[in-house]
Image (cartoon, rainbow, N blue to C red; front, side, top):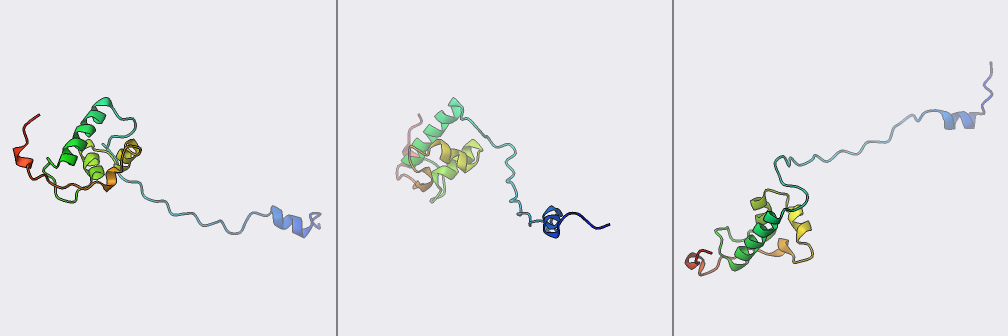
Length: 109
């Protein structure tokens, strides 16, 4: 019994012999326990105070610490979350900590 389907049509209907190679998936970061999503009023208030103290140089931080990394660490969130929140205000990632000369004489607020 001869096939009634022309060879060129049968070739198009046949399943592919090779599947395209799958892209390697990038491993996801373990963000368990990190804050995500919308910022609370308390987080915004706390971050604003951190920014003030960072800018004034009144913190016990190693020289060269970036503001973005500092806030992310204090809020227990991904640095990108901080960047997204403050993207229109200023470049937080470019601000680097420099201790104030009068850091120890700072009065409590």
